[in-house]
Amino acid sequence: MSTAAHLDAAALDAADPLAAHTAAFVPGGDLVAYLDGNSLGRPLATTADALRHLVEREWGDRLIRGWDELWLSRAEELGDRIGAACLGAAAGQTVVGDSTTVLIFKLIRASVAMRPGRTEIAILADEFPTDRFIVEKVAADHGLTVRWVTAPHDGGITPELAAEHVSERTAAALFSGVAYRSAWFADMQAVTGVVQSHGALTIWDCSHAVGSVPLELDAWGVDIAVGCSYKYLNGGPGAPAWAYVAARHQEQVINPIPGWLGARSPFSMTEGYEPAMGIRRLVSGTPPIVGMVPLAEMLTLIEQAGIDAIREKSIALTSYAIELVDELIPDAVVASPRDVARRGSHLTVDHPNAARAVQTLWGEGVIPDFRHPSGVRVGLSPLSTTFAEVERGVRALAGALA
Image (tube, rainbow, N blue to C red; front, top):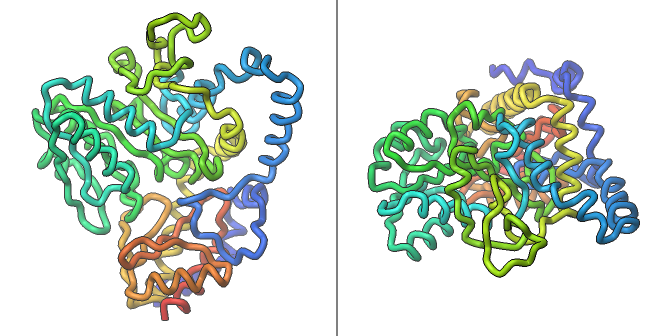
């Protein structure tokens, strides 16, 4: 009999040191179990008041004066908070702005320009679509070859795979810190070292990693990283993304979308563009101030809870979910790492009835998501998900798949 039979969700919740934080989130109406926090995190109850403060006070009272008094430095200030709380990044290396797609485009283009004469970009063949689309477009525009890396279905990039596909021809390699489908948590330090040993740059897409696993970008020698903020950072739909560029690279970065607020003297209105010093050179247009508000609220909660404690609960939640799946859905395949060191905060459960089951579950207030061709993705957001919710969700999934 599996361990799950002996585990009581109520007891696990009672022993959870982060349990009190679940009450900080908007309840969610008719929800029975929300298992999609790795796609869109739940809003904090304080977010509505914070947005009202922005509208009534920062914007309503101060109007245009808000830029000089509050907003011009907010993209960098919020970036520094993300760096300190989630990325292991010293100040001055992270900035918030644009979407993940736009930032990946900027960073791939900049990386290729920083490695002139090289002819290849490496990426997983099963990488998230946006990442693949951008790499293919940049490669086509610059006459480069895409070096496709094939990883196991339940895995992701490894140092060994990187060594097979990266060479002196490689300008840059774009990989995910936590794979969007399998939740494979890469050995980012080792992979970065392999890529750098060939003189290439590594760009890490940390969209499924930031806020759920501790990252040490400075200590690991990471070159560049990027990620969204609407998953475990709970910034809401369309929330602005963030970008990290190690200080040693910043003066070589050329922003392919130069805009006035990324210029050195934006209010001088001079004829020619001269990039700002440091990470601000990645800014193009006006920063999305309204969209930063929910993100700032969640960062406060992450700062209070601590990323290490968040990781411990993530491991406990995903381990409990795997045990329940093994017990209740024996004909399913867990297409995510069973090794906790290599697993992020979601699981993919493969089953032939996955698409139909997810459609059924949504109608019942149980919300996982479907990944083609046969995957049910179960996202467990440590600060908002309870063990009881996991049990309800997996039991409902077992019924729907049957």
